[in-house]
Image (cartoon, rainbow, N blue to C red; front, top):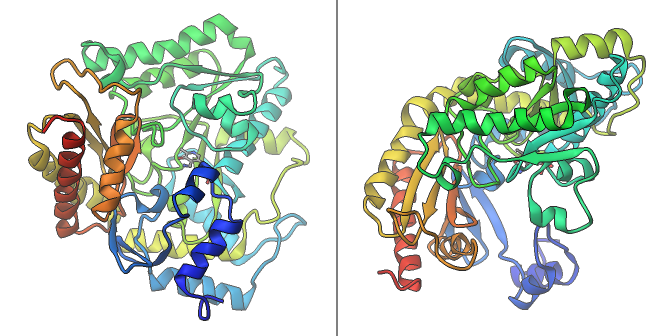
Length: 458
Ligand code: PMP
């Protein structure tokens, strides 16, 4: 079909029939529909006008090994010819599903030896909600049902994962969260510390979780879920004091701890998992995105030993699973993807080389910039806070629209960064070269200069 239709025709078809996620349908159509992306290679994508665009977001925080890797394509192709699909429900498995289970047990922190497969981060988090509820019933503590998470947390878009998330605009559509999902303050020093020293603020933010547990009664609380670094909520990096305190609180009050590693996993923070960077002692980990670098959909729930033992020994049949749980093609691609991350040393490279390099280049380019309040990053994920006053951190009026203005300038300058409230965030492929990092810094400065001019600052 692509061979006979022009790009213009494809865009018209898309505009006529395709409802896009997280999109104002009417507005997109009024603007003439979507930009058509036609190719991807390394850290670059191309659109139908022939623009080469530097993708400093790795798609949706997922293309960790970069676009167009033959190793991954060939793994999928070979698996489709050998066995395109078989299920894992009826006492059957496939080679790739078995191998990937073992590989995940090997690379995840000690104490994770069991995995349950799904297709998306949302499904994986839904799976965890069901497992946690089942677990506490088995433990004879059926009142432990409430989940605690954070404002600006993002855990997906199904009913349960939207409820786990702390996005008020999402809750506003459709009377969410569901009962039994509550939210507390995020460890977001730039916005909330109010001059408090970061480590003290980290402990304070963690104690908000403890206060919520005491308010609800620990006998009613099932689990706490958090992203090691909150991604879609604005790349909120907690002070180092935060997670150890969360470990203590969950242990003392007998609350299960879930680390949503959908963005932070597979090297993004310069460690295989964010849990390792922050010392999180989780009972569950949610994996998706970087597990296949986005080449095909796949997600996984890592189940810690103590929960797994109860579910296995006492649980009987677990009435849950997806047609494509452990899909052999997805698992084969995941194995090839993990092999690339290992053989190219991408985790260590992110921690010791390209992560610090990109940060230094951004700091150099944006040093003293009139609307930049903070640049923060960890490995290859970060945020640039946009403010009206660098000293007082006063924001521009409009309640969080400036990030989108800056984002639009980035788009026009052929670099993709994302606007979240009044910040620009980035999360490029882990294969980013030094030259590409220089380019991100140059284009980010150009775009922020243009934004400042729009705002009457420059
Ligand atoms: N958890 C986190 C931390 C995420 O960032 C996302 C997606 N951005 C999800 C869960 C949901 O994943 P999916 O979109 O694959 O359902």
